[in-house]
Amino acid sequence: MGACLAAGGVTAGQVHEITMTRAEFVPSLATGRISAAVFHADTAYTILHSVKGSHVLDREYKTLPTYWYGSLNVTNSYAKAHPKVVGDVIGAMMAADRWMMNPRNNAKFVKLALRITGEPKKAVEYAIKFDRSIKLWNTSCAMSKKWVASTAHVLLEQKSITSVPAFSQVYDGGYCRAG
Image 1 (cartoon, rainbow, N blue to C red):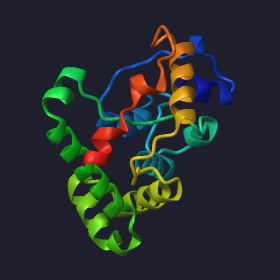
Image 2 (image 1 turned 30 degrees about the vertical axis):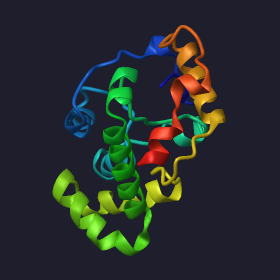
Image 3 (image 1 turned 45 degrees about the vertical axis):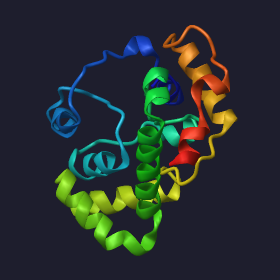
């Protein structure tokens, strides 16, 4: 969040963080309970089209282009005790990612996303198109050392971690390849 704030000329000291569920974002902006928030593309679309006077302060994927936005985590003891389960879960997630990235599945994907999210169709379609354009869903076992290091340095600056871990401490592609 700090990098996005800085890109908009805002400091962390000017922000009062409020914890809320994702479903509360749009009504909270509309009623003035909050003035800003970090949103995924679908929610941002809804806000920009329904909350008068709203605008995009920053596009996080541009401010932090090498930030690793998601991960699947297990303890070392669980992974060692259940390597097939970990591999199968990763394999299933990657199969789903490949399915979502395939434009031939668009109609089914939109229908599924509408049913699950309950969001407006235009917001869902916008988010899917956006996520595909920035290649949000990982479709291979490749993990960039640059992305891991970049993310670790951001987390260190934010004091979320106390030291930068080695790549091997963060990512083990063996489970992915087994899936």
